[in-house]
Image (cartoon, rainbow, N blue to C red; front, side, top):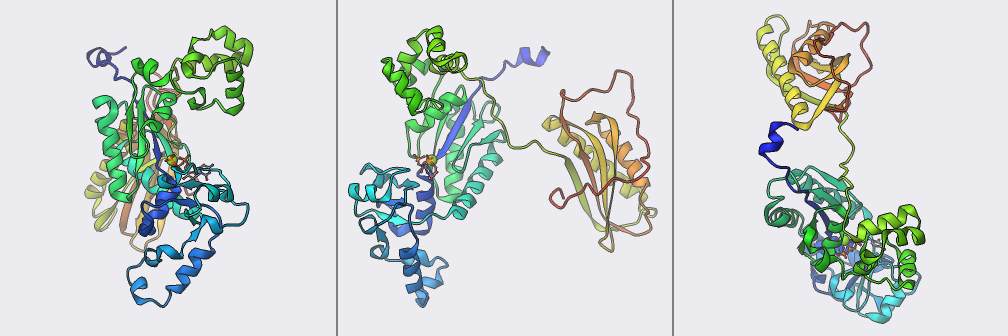
Length: 425
Ligand code: DCP
Ligand code: MG
C-alpha cells in the first residue's frame, strides 16, 4: 500500500444503471410532438404514416419547418382497433401502459385493451442514432461506461466528480439533465454499491426518476421485491423458487446457501445466495481498450527540416511529451512508437519501430520517434507532424523494463506497413 492510500481512503464503490424511458416511443414522440400524452405503441406496419406524409407532400407549410411529420393530424394516424395481423409491440408510451399494454404483446391483443391507441412503425436507424448520442453525452461526463444495449448502460460513479455526493444523486441529476437538454429524452438512474442492485434501482422511480441504494437499504428496499427482479432469475427459475414457497428476495436470502446449492446446483445456487444478499463484484467493463494514442499538429506555416530545425524539434518534443502524459493519465504503456508526416504536396509518410519493452516515458518516446524521423527523406517542407504510441497495454499488466536497464532504441531495417489509419488521425 502506498502512502496515498493511507491519507485518502478508497472512495466507496458507486455504480449506476441508466435506462431510457419508453425508449423507442420517446424517440418517435420527438418528431410527432402532437402525440405527446396519448397512448402510443411502436410496432406493425408503416402504411398509415406513409399515406399521411404523402398527403402533406404538396403542403408548403408542412414542408417549410423541416419536419412534416409534426403536421400530420392526430386523426390520420393508425389506431390499434384497425390493426389486423400478427405483429408485436416493441414498446408503449406510459399512457398506453396504463391500459396494461407492454413490450412483446401482440398488437391485436393490445387493441382489446386500448382500441384508440395510436400505432407507429419501428425505425431502428433513428433509435440507434439517439442511442449513440445519449451514450456520447454520458461518456463526456463519466468515462467508465459499459454498454448494455440500445437504451441502457452501467456507469462507474466511484471516481467521477459528484459521484459520491448524496450517494450519487448529484451526478445522476447532472447526467439526466445533460441528456434531456441535448435530446429531449428522459431516463431513469439507479445508483448502488454494485451492478446487480443498480439495475434493480433504476426501475424504482421510472420514468425520469433517480433511486439511491446503500448497503444498509438491502432489507427495506430489496428484500420485499419479487425474486424475478434479480437480473438473471428468469421465469423458469422463478417458478421453481415459487414451488418451494420462495416469492421475495428476502425469502431467498433466508434460505441456506447449501439448500440453494442442493436444489439449483453449485454455481446457480451460490450465485442466488450472493444475489439475494446484494453481493456482486462484477466490474463495469468499458468498451474496447484503445489500440493507440497519438498527437499531431498542423503547422501555421510549412516548415523545412533544415531551416526550421529548432522549431520543428521543439514541436516534436512537445508532441512526444503530450502523448506520454496522455498515456500516463489514462494508465497505459505502449511498445510501438510511430511518426506521421504530411508534406506540402499533401503526401503522407509514416514510420514506426517497436521497442523491447512498453513505455510511457516522454524521453524514450522522443528517442524512438527521432529514429523513425531519420528514416524519412526530408527534402520537402512539412505541413504536419504526428506522434503515435501503439501496442498498448495497461500499466502494470505489461512486463516492466528491468531495473537498471535502458530502452534500446534502434533503427529498424525496414518500415512497417502504414499504421496510421484515417480514424486515428
Ligand atoms: N424492446 C423490444 N422488445 C422487447 C423489449 C424492448 O423491441 N420485448 C425495445 C423497445 C424499447 C427498448 O427495447 O423501447 C428498450 O427496452 P426497455 O425494456 O428499456 O423498455 P423501454 O425503454 O421502452 O421502457 P422503460 O421506460 O420501461 O425502460
Ligand atoms: Mg428503457
